[in-house]
Length: 243
Image (tube, rainbow, N blue to C red; front, side, top):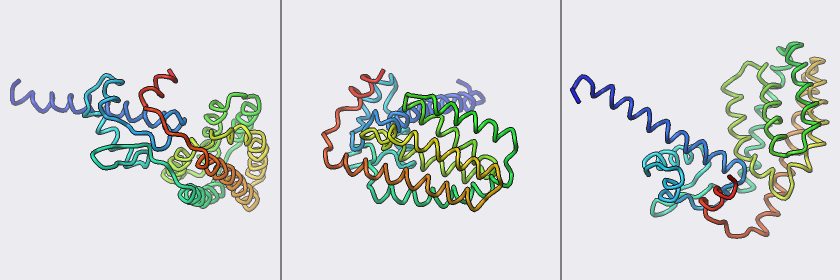
């Protein structure tokens, strides 16, 4: 390898490793988000490297990235586990989300157009027909983003989505999500109607209540789960079982 070709080759190798670590991080993040990897489960670097067919380097980089995002927590002797959120932290996440979304909904109500309103109504109709909770959660996420995008505040919206993703796994505890779907659908339509009227005060009040109801259900599910928590299995067996 010549001196002139070295930077190009090193850049290519670096890009490939970054892509690999990003892939591993995406897979692990999705597994935590869905509840496949449960709170407190150890993420063994050797086992994960074998499962993904990569070296330990991109796995280590992926775990570092996930720790920075709050998904993973490091323990002694380089051990990493899925970071369990305490009820108090979950409550704080919902508190911040409420502050941000009530702000965004006010901006969105002033900017939203007829085409976006039509799309949102169609999403409400689609959510009413869905019987699979995971699919419902996916459309629900898209609905909230589409509703608030008219605020034209991308950085704030990204922050809201990051916080929502952190607590999404707890909606799956003891059927918390399915119990909430019908009620949430009606609340979505009420929020949308207020936005369509340009009634900022009502839209803010409705979205605040909407978030608080979800918060209460999630916190109840977490507390129930803590009472009956069983030891978590290994991530390799759990992820393989969901293939």
